[in-house]
Image 1 (cartoon, helix red, strand yellow):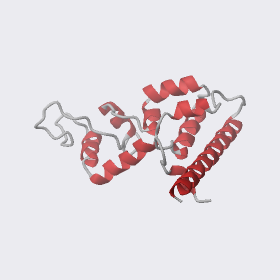
Image 2 (cartoon, helix red, strand yellow):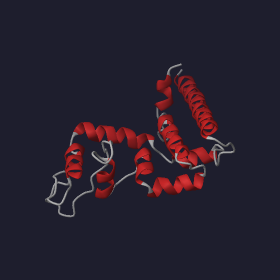
Image 3 (cartoon, helix red, strand yellow):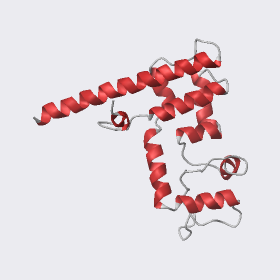
Image 4 (spheres, rainbow, N blue to C red):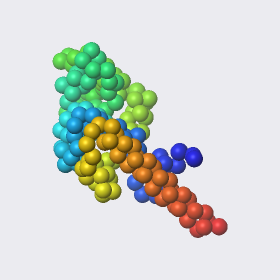
Length: 177
């Protein structure tokens, strides 16, 4: 099966990337989070969950926390515009830590901007999508069983997405022919 179609935005908004859905739910279950409401709260407030979701602007302390030597993450997040219109927001500031200075320089590159655009276009409302499809809480106990539920959810998501994309493609062919 050509999995490329699963990541094609097609009509309407871009689909939620199943890899992000799976990563989010696995990360949550490994840390004992089984509630969709708790996961939603964590996606808004906890740095690690925000990173998985591709979550917007960050604090300098967050970058320091997840970057080496404390963590092993390369940060791809937008740099806020400077209040001073004459200052380039990508230029490191005197009070920036080494990790923040590297992040500013990295995000000035076209490669980093492309990586962030790709991630941002796939990380849409993961929690709401899961809830709307019935994954509100885990009714099983034990890490192995929870992982099995998440894998089945991810597979079902992929299959539903493939069916929808094929139907949309068939409709485009019918309209054009």
